[in-house]
Length: 113
Image (cartoon, rainbow, N blue to C red):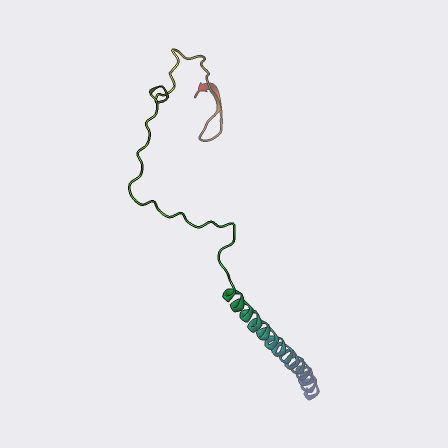
């Protein structure tokens, strides 16, 4: 019983030592990443200071006109009308429904839409 407890104690001490080593490695990596982050933040600040204006493809807004707008020129009378409607229909087409629009079941009789 005592031997079993001592063996278990040895295993736990080994695991503890491995975990301590892992914590130390992670602490070093954390410090390294913090240094990289600080350098990146400094670079961002530097780039924001050196930032010029907008890119060349962006155009500036046009200033608003001062004063009233000029009156529109009226259209000619012949251009101021809609298309004439034909006397009668040229053809008539019927749309037959083969399936119910609500449940998609086949209909026994064809129906016109």
